[in-house]
Image (cartoon, rainbow, N blue to C red; front, side, top):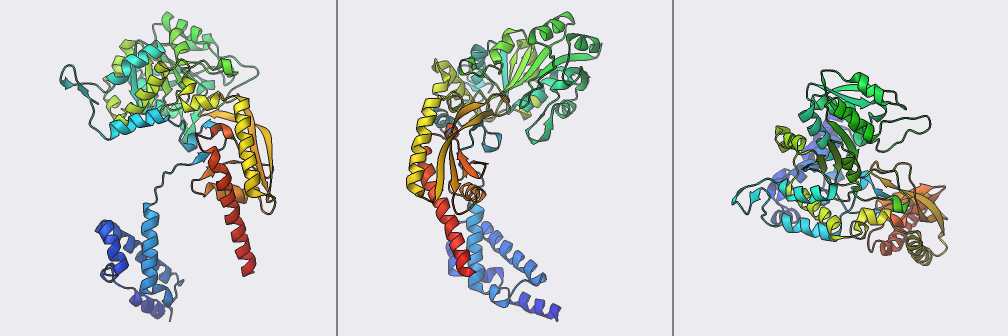
Length: 481
């Protein structure tokens, strides 16, 4: 009986040709490609067949008009961009999950200009022959960092991989146990090192590593001494790590190159803003480290990129490694990075033009003024449907930088009276545009530090829309009950 019922339902499924002949589907064929529309039709029909096999389909669900409606919705959903713009209200500036550092309008405009035109990406205009894409960044980055030479690749992990594969393939690299870090996505320094072909030589203990630990580990197979920025954690208490000066001295005594994976790519001294833990690229270079690698999209404030800076002889070796071609940046990243570096050269205070730095260094008074405006607007929007208060909170730099430093500032706290904070957070996250917030003590919190230009004005109507959606759903459920 079950088999015959299924067979009967299968016989009701219209053919693909019949569906494509329907006027609504014909309209889609004018706008979209035939293979795309056919794929959407097949997706719906395959799902229908699976549900028939599972016994979860009634005959009326196979009506042609219902299938056409489902296909229309399938096409709409398929064409909704997966990558969307959203509002970061978390107070985490370089938010890894939310795209890290936003770019300035001037940098974004430069990317669009290059994207929509031909360019001299690998063409030397003076010589009239093939050029090198790295040449566009070279002189500017050398000026900004004080390095003899630089090489840019597609991210910092790629830079470390290229450096290790060039300078130490098949040989040992000495690293302190306390610096064998894991970064986002479960990528670990030992695994990157293994992929490069270099051999890890751990020294010291997790919390204390001394200069003599490095010296004892050096042998005829040692190729490099590597120091790694501990990124998103700090070891405190009974600790000891080797200084840059000590590292350089050991390298010189044993004729070994030294390298530092700095990670964050900070080019500005942030101590004036109470953030003194982050070493700058210039400081590392000035101490005599032979190679430093760092990111372009963290504290530097540009697009995702990895930059290797240091001694010309070593950088030149990396540039001719075949792996460098596989790891190179595309023209859009190159344009964005060059434009970001120009902001450092153009402005006496880069925080004025680089959004990530502007947010990190924003003053309490300015933040409080924004918080009060948002709070007042929310009170008018929500009336008595929520409690609105302003509390002091601690934002973060993010991106693995300054993990022990808080960015103190105000937060707007919303406590709905008729439903939970988690329901409001969920509605805001699923809104258009999505708003990513914090939940604490049954409050939804909005940190104004990470709101971009004009986004503060959007908060109140988006929260109001979320309230209406939740209360509408509650009213519908009550009516159904």
